[in-house]
Amino acid sequence: MVLYYSATGNTKFMAQQIAKRLGDETLDLLERIRTKDYSEIYSEKPFVICSPVYVCEPPVFLVKYLKRVRLAGNRQVYFVFSSGGYAGISSTIMKRLTRRKKMIYMGRAEVKMPRNYIAGRLYDMNPPEEARRRLKEAVKEIPRIAHVIRRGGILRARYIFQFEKIVTYPFVPVWTRLMQSSRPFYTTEKCIGCGKCARLCPLNNIEMVDRHPVWKKPCSHCMACIGNCPFEAIEYGNITQDREKYNISHYMKKK
Image (cartoon, rainbow, N blue to C red; front, side, top):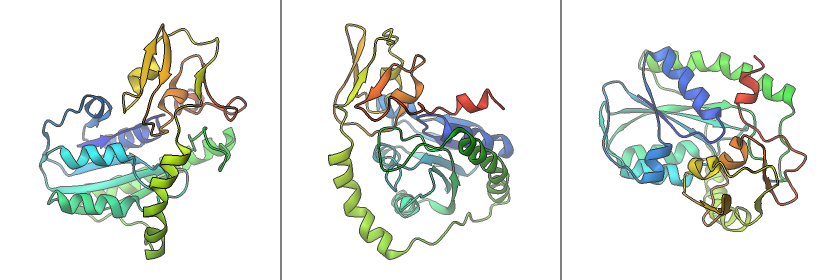
């Protein structure tokens, strides 16, 4: 079974493409995470867990969920990460998780996807031509990943150096605390109060008040709200006004 969490579609696309080639089924973990549903997930085939990368590691809320949920049946687990170009210590964290669950770690793959992090100034969003190029490369890479999984091989990606772990482990909590505020989120006059943003927030961080969203703490900066608003009515401070509100569906329609 292919398990995944996806905010703006990159990881969902990847998971569905892998499942299609494996003849397997997918399970979107969003509602399970939101409702704290830790009921058993059973799979006769190896588990394939597809995850985005936030600040050099998998989403904290996803890791916490996977620690608690029981994965039954097949004991082998593969991981496939979608990132803007650097998966950091994601594999190290998931390898530890697998051992903790007494399962068999079968390696990981990293797929470079279009950037979706619109709320930061550190990296520019990919222009449309670069986003399309990355998606085309991903389409070529996914069959190779599926082939390794299908024959029971080990997925291999680049080596994670010790200095990366030393720098990243203390860096991520500081970055999360200082740079991932929910306070700058707001809606423009285009908001119709549909509530889609609240339904897609993995942390139940958005409350609808008088048909308008109000962002609470904590916030994972997953970009599900801003990337899925059907009217592009959500902004983040003065950073996002002139940036594309990325969602993979914009590019799937153009294919």
